[in-house]
Image (cartoon, rainbow, N blue to C red; front, top):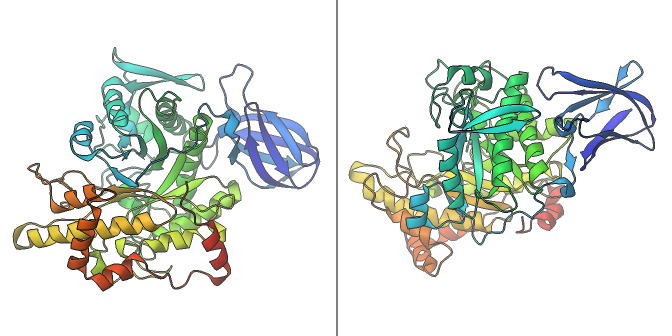
Length: 515
Protein backbone atom coordinates (compact mmCIF):
# COMPACT_ATOMS: atom_id res chain seq x y z
CA UNK A 1 0.00 0.00 0.00
CA UNK A 2 1.19 3.51 -0.84
CA UNK A 3 -0.06 6.72 0.74
CA UNK A 4 -0.94 9.08 -2.11
CA UNK A 5 -1.79 12.24 -0.18
CA UNK A 6 -2.92 13.54 3.20
CA UNK A 7 -5.44 16.35 3.55
CA UNK A 8 -7.05 18.33 6.37
CA UNK A 9 -10.36 20.11 6.78
CA UNK A 10 -12.06 21.71 9.77
CA UNK A 11 -12.50 18.45 11.67
CA UNK A 12 -10.50 15.61 10.11
CA UNK A 13 -7.17 14.56 8.65
CA UNK A 14 -7.76 12.18 5.76
CA UNK A 15 -5.21 9.78 4.30
CA UNK A 16 -5.58 8.52 0.72
CA UNK A 17 -4.01 5.25 -0.45
CA UNK A 18 -3.86 3.07 -3.54
CA UNK A 19 -5.58 0.19 -1.78
CA UNK A 20 -7.83 -0.89 1.07
CA UNK A 21 -7.37 -2.88 4.24
CA UNK A 22 -6.53 -2.76 7.93
CA UNK A 23 -3.59 -0.60 8.98
CA UNK A 24 -1.89 0.91 11.99
CA UNK A 25 -1.26 4.67 11.80
CA UNK A 26 1.47 6.24 13.88
CA UNK A 27 1.05 9.95 14.48
CA UNK A 28 4.22 11.68 15.67
CA UNK A 29 5.72 15.14 16.03
CA UNK A 30 7.49 16.65 12.99
CA UNK A 31 10.90 16.66 14.70
CA UNK A 32 13.50 15.57 12.15
CA UNK A 33 15.37 12.30 12.73
CA UNK A 34 12.70 11.04 15.12
CA UNK A 35 9.83 12.60 16.99
CA UNK A 36 7.54 11.93 19.92
CA UNK A 37 4.76 9.44 19.18
CA UNK A 38 1.35 10.96 19.82
CA UNK A 39 -0.75 7.92 19.03
CA UNK A 40 -0.91 4.48 17.42
CA UNK A 41 -4.32 3.97 15.85
CA UNK A 42 -5.85 0.90 14.26
CA UNK A 43 -7.96 1.74 11.25
CA UNK A 44 -9.09 0.58 7.84
CA UNK A 45 -8.81 2.11 4.41
CA UNK A 46 -12.09 1.89 2.54
CA UNK A 47 -12.28 3.02 -1.06
CA UNK A 48 -8.75 4.31 -0.59
CA UNK A 49 -9.56 6.62 2.31
CA UNK A 50 -9.07 6.73 6.07
CA UNK A 51 -10.17 9.74 8.14
CA UNK A 52 -8.93 10.55 11.63
CA UNK A 53 -10.03 13.30 14.05
CA UNK A 54 -7.98 16.45 13.57
CA UNK A 55 -8.23 17.70 17.16
CA UNK A 56 -7.73 15.93 20.48
CA UNK A 57 -10.73 15.59 22.79
CA UNK A 58 -9.55 18.54 24.91
CA UNK A 59 -8.95 20.67 21.81
CA UNK A 60 -5.31 21.38 22.69
CA UNK A 61 -3.62 19.24 20.04
CA UNK A 62 -4.02 19.85 16.32
CA UNK A 63 -2.95 16.87 14.21
CA UNK A 64 -2.52 19.10 11.16
CA UNK A 65 1.22 19.37 11.88
CA UNK A 66 1.97 15.72 12.58
CA UNK A 67 3.99 13.14 10.70
CA UNK A 68 1.95 10.07 9.66
CA UNK A 69 3.49 6.64 9.21
CA UNK A 70 1.22 3.81 8.03
CA UNK A 71 1.89 0.12 8.66
CA UNK A 72 0.21 -2.74 6.83
CA UNK A 73 0.84 -5.83 8.92
CA UNK A 74 4.57 -5.85 9.63
CA UNK A 75 5.47 -3.55 6.75
CA UNK A 76 5.75 0.25 6.67
CA UNK A 77 3.87 1.73 3.75
CA UNK A 78 5.55 3.96 1.22
CA UNK A 79 4.36 7.39 0.23
CA UNK A 80 3.53 10.72 1.74
CA UNK A 81 3.81 11.44 5.43
CA UNK A 82 2.51 15.00 5.98
CA UNK A 83 -0.64 16.98 5.37
CA UNK A 84 -0.11 18.74 2.06
CA UNK A 85 -3.60 20.05 1.33
CA UNK A 86 -5.64 22.18 3.74
CA UNK A 87 -9.20 23.15 2.90
CA UNK A 88 -9.64 26.85 2.31
CA UNK A 89 -12.83 26.80 4.36
CA UNK A 90 -10.97 25.75 7.50
CA UNK A 91 -8.89 28.95 7.58
CA UNK A 92 -9.79 31.81 9.91
CA UNK A 93 -9.18 34.25 7.03
CA UNK A 94 -10.19 32.88 3.62
CA UNK A 95 -9.66 36.06 1.60
CA UNK A 96 -7.57 35.90 -1.61
CA UNK A 97 -3.92 36.92 -1.82
CA UNK A 98 -3.79 40.71 -1.46
CA UNK A 99 -3.93 42.72 -4.64
CA UNK A 100 -1.29 45.33 -5.30
CA UNK A 101 -0.90 47.82 -8.10
CA UNK A 102 2.88 47.56 -8.23
CA UNK A 103 5.56 45.03 -7.42
CA UNK A 104 7.63 47.79 -5.81
CA UNK A 105 8.59 47.08 -2.17
CA UNK A 106 10.95 48.46 0.46
CA UNK A 107 12.13 47.63 3.97
CA UNK A 108 12.02 51.06 5.57
CA UNK A 109 11.04 52.37 8.98
CA UNK A 110 7.41 53.46 9.36
CA UNK A 111 8.52 57.09 9.52
CA UNK A 112 10.57 56.85 6.32
CA UNK A 113 7.87 54.82 4.60
CA UNK A 114 5.29 57.54 5.26
CA UNK A 115 7.66 60.44 4.55
CA UNK A 116 9.48 59.20 1.43
CA UNK A 117 8.36 55.89 -0.04
CA UNK A 118 4.64 55.17 0.26
CA UNK A 119 5.27 51.60 -0.94
CA UNK A 120 2.42 49.10 -0.89
CA UNK A 121 4.56 46.17 0.23
CA UNK A 122 6.98 45.81 3.14
CA UNK A 123 9.51 43.12 3.99
CA UNK A 124 10.49 43.14 7.68
CA UNK A 125 13.23 41.02 9.25
CA UNK A 126 11.84 39.26 12.34
CA UNK A 127 14.18 37.34 14.65
CA UNK A 128 12.92 34.64 16.98
CA UNK A 129 15.44 35.45 19.76
CA UNK A 130 14.56 39.11 19.45
CA UNK A 131 10.83 38.57 19.86
CA UNK A 132 10.55 35.70 22.36
CA UNK A 133 11.74 35.35 25.96
CA UNK A 134 11.81 32.85 28.80
CA UNK A 135 11.75 35.68 31.33
CA UNK A 136 8.22 37.11 31.47
CA UNK A 137 7.61 40.50 33.04
CA UNK A 138 4.80 43.06 33.14
CA UNK A 139 5.37 43.92 29.46
CA UNK A 140 5.41 40.43 27.95
CA UNK A 141 2.56 39.08 25.84
CA UNK A 142 1.39 35.56 26.65
CA UNK A 143 0.61 33.22 23.79
CA UNK A 144 -0.72 29.69 24.18
CA UNK A 145 -0.09 26.97 21.63
CA UNK A 146 -0.89 23.26 22.04
CA UNK A 147 -1.65 23.87 25.72
CA UNK A 148 1.73 25.51 26.42
CA UNK A 149 2.35 29.18 27.20
CA UNK A 150 5.06 31.21 25.46
CA UNK A 151 6.15 34.78 26.07
CA UNK A 152 6.74 37.57 23.56
CA UNK A 153 8.45 40.85 24.38
CA UNK A 154 5.99 43.71 24.27
CA UNK A 155 8.25 46.50 22.98
CA UNK A 156 9.54 44.77 19.82
CA UNK A 157 6.06 43.43 19.10
CA UNK A 158 4.65 46.95 19.23
CA UNK A 159 7.42 48.18 16.93
CA UNK A 160 6.54 45.42 14.48
CA UNK A 161 2.86 46.40 14.72
CA UNK A 162 3.81 49.95 13.75
CA UNK A 163 5.85 48.68 10.80
CA UNK A 164 3.11 46.36 9.58
CA UNK A 165 0.44 49.07 9.74
CA UNK A 166 2.59 51.35 7.56
CA UNK A 167 2.27 49.02 4.54
CA UNK A 168 -0.64 47.54 2.65
CA UNK A 169 0.81 44.10 3.29
CA UNK A 170 4.19 42.62 4.12
CA UNK A 171 6.18 39.43 3.74
CA UNK A 172 8.28 38.50 6.77
CA UNK A 173 11.82 37.19 6.71
CA UNK A 174 11.98 34.81 9.68
CA UNK A 175 15.46 34.66 11.24
CA UNK A 176 17.21 32.89 14.08
CA UNK A 177 20.32 34.65 15.33
CA UNK A 178 22.23 35.34 18.53
CA UNK A 179 24.24 38.01 16.66
CA UNK A 180 21.72 40.73 15.96
CA UNK A 181 18.15 41.07 14.73
CA UNK A 182 17.04 42.10 18.21
CA UNK A 183 18.61 39.23 20.15
CA UNK A 184 19.42 40.08 23.79
CA UNK A 185 21.69 37.08 24.15
CA UNK A 186 19.24 35.28 26.43
CA UNK A 187 21.21 32.07 26.74
CA UNK A 188 18.44 29.76 27.93
CA UNK A 189 16.29 30.76 24.96
CA UNK A 190 19.18 30.49 22.51
CA UNK A 191 20.02 27.00 23.72
CA UNK A 192 16.48 25.96 22.79
CA UNK A 193 16.04 27.73 19.46
CA UNK A 194 19.51 27.70 17.86
CA UNK A 195 20.38 24.68 15.75
CA UNK A 196 22.36 22.19 17.89
CA UNK A 197 25.16 22.16 15.29
CA UNK A 198 25.27 25.91 14.79
CA UNK A 199 28.89 27.06 14.61
CA UNK A 200 28.22 30.00 16.91
CA UNK A 201 31.88 30.64 17.68
CA UNK A 202 32.59 31.23 13.99
CA UNK A 203 32.38 35.01 13.38
CA UNK A 204 31.23 34.38 9.81
CA UNK A 205 28.26 32.24 10.92
CA UNK A 206 25.88 35.15 11.36
CA UNK A 207 22.56 33.29 11.50
CA UNK A 208 21.57 29.84 12.73
CA UNK A 209 19.22 27.41 11.07
CA UNK A 210 16.00 26.84 12.99
CA UNK A 211 16.19 23.94 15.42
CA UNK A 212 13.97 21.20 13.99
CA UNK A 213 15.87 18.46 15.85
CA UNK A 214 14.31 18.68 19.31
CA UNK A 215 10.76 18.82 20.65
CA UNK A 216 11.44 22.13 22.38
CA UNK A 217 13.16 23.58 19.30
CA UNK A 218 10.20 22.74 17.08
CA UNK A 219 7.74 23.94 19.73
CA UNK A 220 9.38 27.36 20.04
CA UNK A 221 9.74 27.77 16.30
CA UNK A 222 6.08 26.82 15.80
CA UNK A 223 4.97 29.25 18.53
CA UNK A 224 7.06 32.00 16.92
CA UNK A 225 5.41 31.44 13.54
CA UNK A 226 1.91 30.97 14.92
CA UNK A 227 2.09 34.13 17.02
CA UNK A 228 3.04 36.17 13.94
CA UNK A 229 0.54 34.55 11.62
CA UNK A 230 -2.38 34.72 14.04
CA UNK A 231 -1.63 38.37 14.84
CA UNK A 232 -1.03 39.65 11.31
CA UNK A 233 -3.61 37.72 9.27
CA UNK A 234 -6.64 38.59 11.38
CA UNK A 235 -9.59 39.38 9.09
CA UNK A 236 -9.76 42.88 10.59
CA UNK A 237 -5.97 43.43 10.11
CA UNK A 238 -5.90 45.26 13.43
CA UNK A 239 -2.11 45.01 13.68
CA UNK A 240 -1.31 45.06 9.97
CA UNK A 241 -1.38 42.45 7.23
CA UNK A 242 1.07 39.64 6.45
CA UNK A 243 0.86 37.81 3.13
CA UNK A 244 3.65 35.29 3.68
CA UNK A 245 6.99 34.42 5.22
CA UNK A 246 10.47 33.83 3.82
CA UNK A 247 12.11 31.10 5.90
CA UNK A 248 15.64 32.15 6.81
CA UNK A 249 18.05 33.95 4.54
CA UNK A 250 20.16 32.83 1.55
CA UNK A 251 20.25 29.20 2.62
CA UNK A 252 22.51 28.19 -0.26
CA UNK A 253 25.15 30.04 1.81
CA UNK A 254 24.09 28.28 4.99
CA UNK A 255 27.60 28.48 6.39
CA UNK A 256 26.94 32.20 6.87
CA UNK A 257 23.21 32.86 6.73
CA UNK A 258 21.54 29.70 8.10
CA UNK A 259 24.31 27.74 9.75
CA UNK A 260 23.77 24.15 10.81
CA UNK A 261 27.36 22.93 10.74
CA UNK A 262 28.56 20.57 8.03
CA UNK A 263 25.79 18.97 5.95
CA UNK A 264 25.26 17.94 2.38
CA UNK A 265 22.67 19.95 0.51
CA UNK A 266 20.22 17.02 0.73
CA UNK A 267 20.68 16.78 4.49
CA UNK A 268 20.27 20.50 4.97
CA UNK A 269 17.13 20.70 2.84
CA UNK A 270 15.58 17.81 4.77
CA UNK A 271 15.62 20.02 7.88
CA UNK A 272 14.96 23.30 6.12
CA UNK A 273 11.93 21.88 4.29
CA UNK A 274 10.54 20.73 7.64
CA UNK A 275 10.67 24.35 8.84
CA UNK A 276 9.09 25.54 5.58
CA UNK A 277 6.32 22.97 5.76
CA UNK A 278 5.45 23.71 9.37
CA UNK A 279 5.30 27.45 8.64
CA UNK A 280 3.07 26.76 5.63
CA UNK A 281 0.72 24.54 7.64
CA UNK A 282 0.46 27.13 10.41
CA UNK A 283 -0.01 29.89 7.85
CA UNK A 284 -2.81 28.09 6.03
CA UNK A 285 -4.56 27.25 9.30
CA UNK A 286 -5.15 30.96 9.77
CA UNK A 287 -5.01 32.35 6.25
CA UNK A 288 -5.95 30.48 3.08
CA UNK A 289 -3.52 32.45 0.87
CA UNK A 290 -0.47 32.54 3.18
CA UNK A 291 2.76 31.76 1.30
CA UNK A 292 6.17 30.50 2.34
CA UNK A 293 9.40 30.99 0.40
CA UNK A 294 12.86 29.49 0.12
CA UNK A 295 15.55 32.21 0.24
CA UNK A 296 18.44 32.04 -2.26
CA UNK A 297 21.41 34.09 -3.51
CA UNK A 298 22.39 34.81 -7.11
CA UNK A 299 24.76 31.78 -7.19
CA UNK A 300 22.65 29.62 -9.49
CA UNK A 301 24.80 26.70 -10.72
CA UNK A 302 28.06 27.61 -9.01
CA UNK A 303 28.43 27.78 -5.24
CA UNK A 304 30.12 30.42 -3.14
CA UNK A 305 33.77 29.37 -2.68
CA UNK A 306 34.19 27.31 0.46
CA UNK A 307 33.22 23.95 1.89
CA UNK A 308 30.67 22.02 -0.15
CA UNK A 309 29.11 21.06 3.19
CA UNK A 310 28.26 24.69 3.91
CA UNK A 311 27.86 26.31 0.49
CA UNK A 312 25.52 24.95 -2.19
CA UNK A 313 24.10 26.20 -5.46
CA UNK A 314 20.66 27.79 -5.57
CA UNK A 315 19.71 25.39 -8.36
CA UNK A 316 20.61 22.35 -6.25
CA UNK A 317 18.59 23.70 -3.34
CA UNK A 318 15.48 24.01 -5.52
CA UNK A 319 16.05 20.56 -7.01
CA UNK A 320 16.38 19.01 -3.55
CA UNK A 321 13.36 20.87 -2.19
CA UNK A 322 11.28 19.70 -5.14
CA UNK A 323 12.40 16.09 -4.76
CA UNK A 324 11.95 15.85 -1.01
CA UNK A 325 8.61 17.62 -0.77
CA UNK A 326 7.24 15.50 -3.62
CA UNK A 327 8.16 12.38 -1.65
CA UNK A 328 6.76 13.55 1.69
CA UNK A 329 3.79 15.54 0.42
CA UNK A 330 4.20 18.53 -1.86
CA UNK A 331 2.93 21.87 -0.59
CA UNK A 332 2.58 25.37 -1.93
CA UNK A 333 6.13 26.73 -1.52
CA UNK A 334 7.59 29.59 -3.52
CA UNK A 335 10.94 31.25 -4.21
CA UNK A 336 12.55 34.40 -2.74
CA UNK A 337 15.57 35.28 -4.87
CA UNK A 338 18.34 37.89 -4.60
CA UNK A 339 19.45 38.76 -8.16
CA UNK A 340 22.29 41.11 -7.25
CA UNK A 341 24.90 41.83 -9.95
CA UNK A 342 27.43 39.02 -10.13
CA UNK A 343 29.87 41.37 -8.37
CA UNK A 344 27.91 43.20 -5.68
CA UNK A 345 30.31 46.13 -5.73
CA UNK A 346 29.65 46.95 -9.40
CA UNK A 347 26.09 48.09 -10.18
CA UNK A 348 26.39 47.87 -14.00
CA UNK A 349 24.82 44.39 -14.26
CA UNK A 350 24.39 44.76 -18.02
CA UNK A 351 28.12 44.02 -18.19
CA UNK A 352 27.86 40.80 -16.15
CA UNK A 353 29.72 37.96 -17.83
CA UNK A 354 28.67 34.95 -15.72
CA UNK A 355 24.94 35.59 -16.11
CA UNK A 356 23.77 34.15 -19.41
CA UNK A 357 20.36 33.12 -20.74
CA UNK A 358 20.68 29.40 -20.09
CA UNK A 359 18.97 27.43 -17.30
CA UNK A 360 22.48 26.29 -16.34
CA UNK A 361 23.89 29.79 -16.08
CA UNK A 362 26.48 30.20 -13.30
CA UNK A 363 24.63 33.22 -11.86
CA UNK A 364 21.16 34.68 -12.03
CA UNK A 365 21.56 38.43 -11.67
CA UNK A 366 19.43 41.36 -12.81
CA UNK A 367 20.83 40.72 -16.28
CA UNK A 368 19.14 37.32 -16.71
CA UNK A 369 16.52 37.20 -13.96
CA UNK A 370 13.99 35.78 -16.44
CA UNK A 371 15.92 32.47 -16.34
CA UNK A 372 14.50 31.74 -12.89
CA UNK A 373 10.92 32.03 -14.11
CA UNK A 374 11.62 29.89 -17.17
CA UNK A 375 13.29 27.24 -15.03
CA UNK A 376 10.41 27.09 -12.54
CA UNK A 377 7.83 26.89 -15.32
CA UNK A 378 8.91 23.33 -16.13
CA UNK A 379 6.25 20.74 -15.36
CA UNK A 380 8.15 19.03 -12.55
CA UNK A 381 8.18 22.23 -10.47
CA UNK A 382 4.50 23.08 -10.76
CA UNK A 383 2.10 22.90 -7.83
CA UNK A 384 -1.44 21.89 -8.81
CA UNK A 385 -0.62 22.88 -12.37
CA UNK A 386 0.59 26.37 -11.51
CA UNK A 387 4.15 27.73 -11.32
CA UNK A 388 5.78 28.76 -8.07
CA UNK A 389 5.56 32.49 -7.45
CA UNK A 390 8.71 34.61 -7.19
CA UNK A 391 9.59 37.52 -4.95
CA UNK A 392 12.83 39.40 -5.46
CA UNK A 393 13.17 40.02 -1.77
CA UNK A 394 16.63 41.58 -1.47
CA UNK A 395 18.70 43.30 -4.11
CA UNK A 396 20.23 46.68 -4.75
CA UNK A 397 22.94 48.73 -6.40
CA UNK A 398 26.15 49.60 -4.63
CA UNK A 399 27.46 53.13 -4.83
CA UNK A 400 31.18 53.61 -4.41
CA UNK A 401 33.11 56.30 -2.61
CA UNK A 402 35.94 58.33 -4.03
CA UNK A 403 36.50 59.19 -7.72
CA UNK A 404 33.92 56.67 -9.00
CA UNK A 405 31.14 57.71 -6.62
CA UNK A 406 29.12 59.70 -9.13
CA UNK A 407 29.76 57.21 -11.91
CA UNK A 408 28.48 54.29 -9.82
CA UNK A 409 25.44 56.24 -8.64
CA UNK A 410 24.40 56.96 -12.22
CA UNK A 411 24.87 53.28 -13.07
CA UNK A 412 22.62 52.49 -10.10
CA UNK A 413 20.00 54.92 -11.38
CA UNK A 414 19.94 53.23 -14.80
CA UNK A 415 20.08 49.80 -13.18
CA UNK A 416 16.99 50.39 -11.05
CA UNK A 417 14.98 51.29 -14.13
CA UNK A 418 15.98 48.33 -16.28
CA UNK A 419 15.88 45.75 -13.49
CA UNK A 420 12.46 46.90 -12.33
CA UNK A 421 11.05 46.82 -15.86
CA UNK A 422 12.43 43.31 -16.39
CA UNK A 423 10.88 42.08 -13.14
CA UNK A 424 7.59 43.76 -13.96
CA UNK A 425 7.50 42.02 -17.35
CA UNK A 426 7.79 38.62 -15.70
CA UNK A 427 4.51 36.80 -15.14
CA UNK A 428 5.07 35.19 -11.74
CA UNK A 429 6.78 38.01 -9.82
CA UNK A 430 4.90 39.64 -6.95
CA UNK A 431 7.60 41.76 -5.34
CA UNK A 432 10.74 43.72 -6.17
CA UNK A 433 12.31 44.84 -2.89
CA UNK A 434 15.10 47.38 -3.00
CA UNK A 435 17.73 46.71 -0.35
CA UNK A 436 18.02 48.85 1.49
CA UNK A 437 16.34 52.17 2.11
CA UNK A 438 19.46 53.76 3.67
CA UNK A 439 23.18 52.92 3.33
CA UNK A 440 24.32 50.62 6.13
CA UNK A 441 27.90 51.37 7.27
CA UNK A 442 28.28 47.83 8.59
CA UNK A 443 27.26 46.00 5.42
CA UNK A 444 30.59 44.59 4.27
CA UNK A 445 31.74 47.84 2.68
CA UNK A 446 28.67 48.11 0.45
CA UNK A 447 26.43 51.15 0.08
CA UNK A 448 23.19 49.58 -1.10
CA UNK A 449 20.71 52.18 0.10
CA UNK A 450 18.60 54.53 -1.96
CA UNK A 451 19.56 57.19 0.55
CA UNK A 452 23.07 58.13 1.67
CA UNK A 453 24.28 57.97 5.29
CA UNK A 454 23.65 61.70 5.64
CA UNK A 455 20.01 61.40 4.61
CA UNK A 456 20.41 62.67 1.04
CA UNK A 457 18.63 60.67 -1.69
CA UNK A 458 20.80 59.17 -4.41
CA UNK A 459 19.91 59.25 -8.11
CA UNK A 460 18.50 55.71 -7.89
CA UNK A 461 16.03 56.87 -5.22
CA UNK A 462 14.39 59.19 -7.73
CA UNK A 463 14.42 56.45 -10.38
CA UNK A 464 12.88 53.91 -8.00
CA UNK A 465 10.15 56.34 -6.98
CA UNK A 466 9.42 57.26 -10.61
CA UNK A 467 8.61 53.72 -11.71
CA UNK A 468 4.89 53.12 -12.28
CA UNK A 469 4.25 56.87 -12.32
CA UNK A 470 3.95 59.49 -15.04
CA UNK A 471 7.64 60.28 -14.47
CA UNK A 472 8.76 56.81 -15.54
CA UNK A 473 9.30 57.64 -19.22
CA UNK A 474 11.83 60.34 -18.33
CA UNK A 475 13.95 57.90 -16.35
CA UNK A 476 13.62 55.18 -19.00
CA UNK A 477 15.15 57.54 -21.57
CA UNK A 478 17.99 58.38 -19.17
CA UNK A 479 18.62 54.66 -18.55
CA UNK A 480 18.68 53.90 -22.27
CA UNK A 481 21.21 56.66 -22.81
CA UNK A 482 23.39 55.32 -20.00
CA UNK A 483 23.21 51.62 -20.97
CA UNK A 484 22.78 51.95 -24.72
CA UNK A 485 19.38 51.63 -26.37
CA UNK A 486 20.10 48.39 -28.25
CA UNK A 487 21.48 46.65 -25.16
CA UNK A 488 18.63 48.01 -23.02
CA UNK A 489 16.00 46.59 -25.39
CA UNK A 490 17.83 43.28 -25.75
CA UNK A 491 17.99 42.77 -21.98
CA UNK A 492 14.40 43.87 -21.53
CA UNK A 493 13.12 41.08 -23.80
CA UNK A 494 15.69 38.25 -23.67
CA UNK A 495 15.25 34.77 -25.10
CA UNK A 496 15.94 31.82 -22.79
CA UNK A 497 17.89 29.40 -24.94
CA UNK A 498 17.36 25.98 -23.42
CA UNK A 499 14.02 25.57 -21.65
CA UNK A 500 13.17 21.88 -22.28
CA UNK A 501 11.31 21.66 -25.57
CA UNK A 502 8.58 19.36 -24.27
CA UNK A 503 7.52 22.13 -21.89
CA UNK A 504 7.40 25.00 -24.38
CA UNK A 505 3.63 24.97 -24.85
CA UNK A 506 3.09 24.43 -21.14
CA UNK A 507 5.40 27.31 -20.31
CA UNK A 508 3.45 29.67 -22.53
CA UNK A 509 0.08 28.57 -21.20
CA UNK A 510 0.77 28.67 -17.46
CA UNK A 511 2.61 31.96 -17.23
CA UNK A 512 -0.13 34.46 -16.54
CA UNK A 513 0.31 37.69 -14.64
CA UNK A 514 -2.04 36.72 -11.80
CA UNK A 515 -1.27 35.69 -8.24
